[in-house]
Image (tube, rainbow, N blue to C red; front, side, top):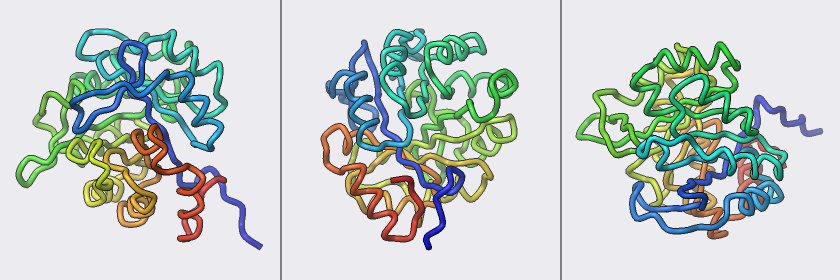
Length: 258
């Protein structure tokens, strides 16, 4: 008899809704954004298709000095049963509280955490480590992989593995690792980068950036050692079905919830 798949063991698939001005957008390497639909409608579709969690990112919130739109979050939360992660412009515990009050199960912090790493600890102490995801947007720069802030626009002096370790030490429950180089290319996840971060941590790592085919998910869970994988374009455009991906993962011996 096959042993049941527990939440702790299961590999998760996350769909990402990058939201700007109340609409879902998608681009390549964080540029050239195009309209991809209504966030609430897409969220309901992904819930029905078997996505394990949903990530909503207000892609211009940090740049424009705005918090992720609470109305959008509320509309999505009212129509889905899966966990909801929300990020974009969260600079304080109060900001995190507003998003959670609107229906988020977890909050993602990025630029504000780089500026003040104590924010990670403050949110974890208020809501628990399981509610804090530190998003890391990383780009290769010569022989280093540097962390970028402000929606990937501004390189920092931080190195990806080093910052991920610090985030874990400060109370992060998960890392959302996005390869800017791979983002939107559909050429596959950055498995070496994902593995480097995953192997350095004891908390889950969500791989993001580059998914374009079913086997890319197999690769990032095996060679990349990821605990979860996030995608946008392949789900928005129906290039890969969630069911097919999970069936392929299970056929390769990787535990998933069907």
